[in-house]
Length: 209
Image (tube, rainbow, N blue to C red):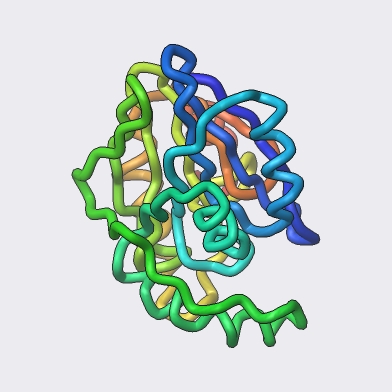
């Protein structure tokens, strides 16, 4: 599996372009904004976008999803339907941050715990990891040992849980019971900041001690 992180918007959100090296089929994960910047990287890599993947429903992770899905003629996949209220409330989220209005969004496919997403010869296992939002999911490519973790865990930190229907206890349980058992060697790409490994965070992350 190959990937490139594309920081977008004033939130410095990590949009990820991921692709299968054998087929050159690619997905855009969590396009929070700056659609033209994302499209420029896609063109540079010469890959074929087949889907837009979303970890959760916050504006800074979905702001350019509809525009990019329309531009490439591809479906939006994820998150879990428990985040529907966040996607329905995108206009309100836009006003809260003083940004141009983002229309409500409904994905073409909701994802559930245990689902699989195919990308060329790659296969992503879907895990539900509530806490930051109730419908937050993560994408795990088992062969590559790569995890796209959204805003669940960061290098030295964890996601905020003070949003509506957030829960710090659920968040920590998601990390300890779902993510850490995937293995210390797993590299994760978070929604903000640098990547890390689950092993490093298990030992040094102050929120997990």
